[in-house]
Length: 136
Image (tube, rainbow, N blue to C red; front, side):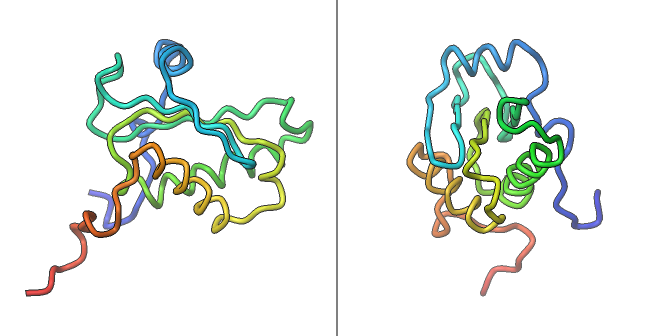
């Protein structure tokens, strides 16, 4: 147990080449001014009970590593905070330059819109947080 903290574990991330190749081959693309997202629901070669993600941010995005790392951190933070609201799937995020001046709240709004259109976000009415007590 991690003491009630919300963390990203190694198993939450896509890691091997086969997973990336499957996503690029069979994944459904969602585009936004901030990023391109490739999504692959379960049953298409990737079997997992939890949502898994990866971020690809190359030098073409920006020549400075500090800027690329900030973009990765914003996207990773969205997944860390919302992984319990995302249905089981594989997600690959490729940020665009428009994300550079943005903050976490705007990234969250854009990511929720893309994942919501794909039917991968659990709506608040269906979502039940196991850490909060239910009203009796």
